[in-house]
Figure 1 (cartoon, one colour):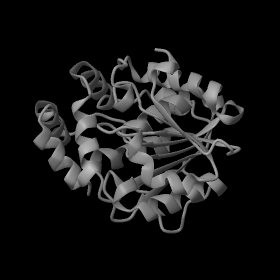
Figure 2 (cartoon, rainbow, N blue to C red):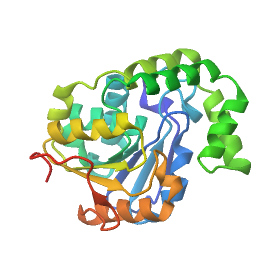
Figure 3 (tube, rainbow, N blue to C red):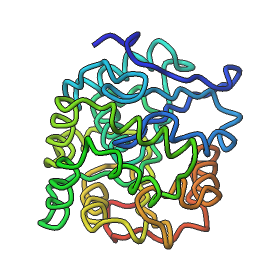
Figure 4 (spheres, rainbow, N blue to C red):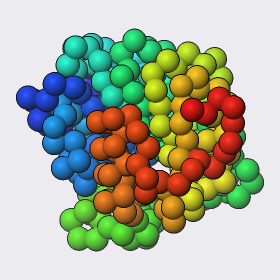
Length: 266
């Protein structure tokens, strides 16, 4: 998988430090548009992951292969060959793989909503239904409206989801809803902030506990009243939290304490 195959938006080329944004499943790099102002002082790389958006023609091989691809991308395109990683959902899972497989390339991580373990029956049933309805525009219109999307934004969301091939989505779902390799988490050496929406799925909250136990230099926090896609649910809160982390490696006071209490959290 060659890095040139990935579509990528680049912002703020004069920035001294690079932020690599990794989008969630069913969307693409465009999902980060509400965050552009929050990172105006940083050089930003916003790729479409394999199988998504402008990279829909690229086959998804595996989480590891995607992390290795992004590592090469950082080496070639990031300032000093290092980057802060910002990831949501699928992007957070990929970000942890990247940070664990290539720790020297990651300055820090701002990650949220990563499923790191197998789902319970309710989540598994929802995933089964999503796979069955994947090719139906009405399903994605309903989901998009649930995220607060409308007009052209809703149209792009629907088109992006429908553009993901059956082969790619089956590979991705199989990995996302598996158990994350603990040895990769333990190799993460950069500071990580793992944020969980207080109204996110139990699977994601349980995963915060796994991350807190296994990632050496991690802090956990809760976004009060937020669901999974909180970068668009409360743009102001997300951007304040992101800026605080990128500029000072601090947890913004508008975030609540993490959903877990662990001796490994600092």
